[in-house]
Amino acid sequence: QFGGQRFGEMEVWALEAYGASYTLQEMLTVKSDDVAGRTKVYENIVKGEHKIDAGMPESFNVLTKEIRSLAIDIDLDRN
Image (cartoon, rainbow, N blue to C red; front, side):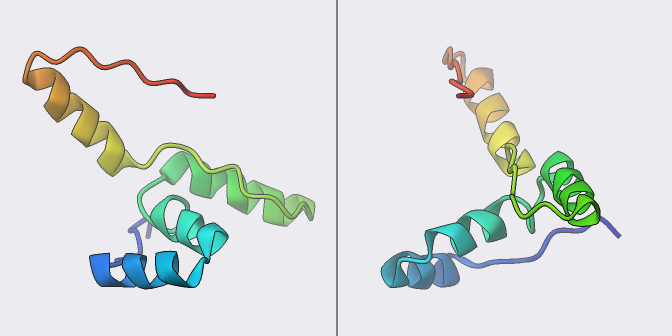
């Protein structure tokens, strides 16, 4: 039900080369594992608004936790 869409490394490179930044952002956040962002997109569709408020992908949160487990202090700027 809430599973993400798989997008491989070669596909990411192809979109980067093509310059499709908005499509790439959508594929790596809302259509991936950003459950909160996906919920916001559903709400915007129902309201008739055409904007994507992408959040932080869960895979990035896992990466930051792994970095912190190595005793590296990391702070994220969420602006």
